[in-house]
Image (cartoon, rainbow, N blue to C red; front, side):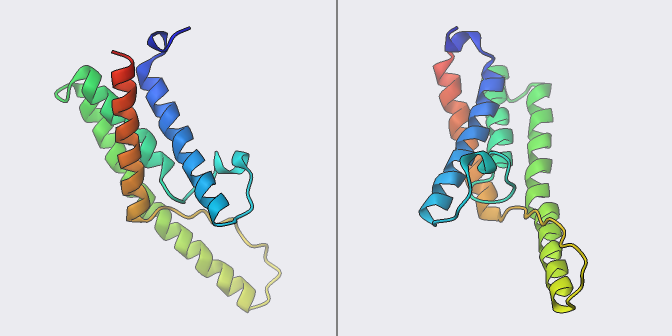
Length: 145
């Protein structure tokens, strides 16, 4: 099986997701955080945003293959904007609220089990994820010509 036999759309999304998570793992290793690579394939938050990388890679490959005037490009662009907005605004906000709930529970010495807190992304994490995704989209496009 050659690279030309694989869907460039799926390949681009998959590569963007994996590369973003590998970068997160490398950054955490440099910062001496103790998590396994497997944990980083499913963690939320962190630098760069894998969600942003994946959706931007998708938009990029669709734009290059199908053209920016295609309906699929428009739909993928809308989806990407929603995902990235959600990562910065909604998920980030709920993560901050989760941290505040943790502080409240701890300060009252409550026996309530601490809920899981999933942080969203900073604008920088989303922007760098988008740049990574666009680059991967371009590379896959050129590799599959």
